[in-house]
Length: 323
Image 1 (cartoon, rainbow, N blue to C red):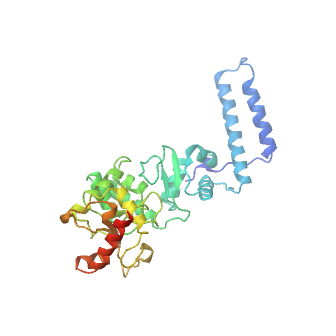
Image 2: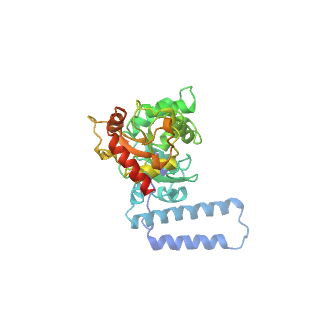
Image 3: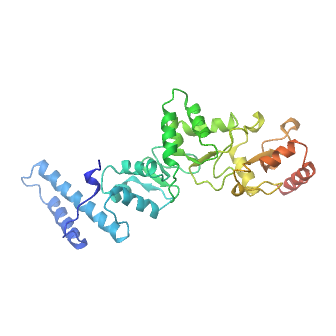
């Protein structure tokens, strides 16, 4: 059943000038000497003023093309007008014209597939939101979002630890971007998911990428588990994220041997980008940008089969000379 407050009936005299005069009159009444009015009458005056201001807000939205009778549609149009912009809840309350705007935002996210982050969750380094702030990742709705929320809801109910819930959610979405909002929901805690993702990446070696670490095509607030099979070796799990970013940026997010980029991915050739140590740990190699290069998983496997040695040796010297 729809909420009757979702649409606000317009009176014929609710023009711009009429609303301004009405608000001015109501403000004057509130500013008058106390007199014999009781508390309730004053509160009711404030209620009438609030209604007038709400209608004025809708008039302003009409003038700028955000015109719709349903609150959820006004919110959708407003988010689309300002994608990848931090928006305060107070703004959305004005746009929606109802107090329960947060429920409509959740409908946009869960039922309509819009990737909207909220400050009710804790986000990583890519984006930071305060409580009651919102951020639309992409203007195109994600048709798979409803399925992912169903999966997250099922995993959220499992009687296992937060890290296991995050891992299970990622494993059910291998190769598919998921949002911080979904991970936080599945983990059952805003403070849990970011730490658990880091643990899965650095302690257990799962190749989880962001827009800053190997997947520049991702939006801020998105993660992707690249593969369920290619778990990093123990000594490769502690490369600082700052060093990873340097290497991916220096190498242009492409394999240094064959030039493969993530944009070339296809189902018949599901390779991923990885970091390779020019000097292995066993020979004293460090987890530093000067000792790391980006390779695709196919070339990485070939290197371990004894190929490309001369090329990598020349590349290592060139990196050393330029650093």
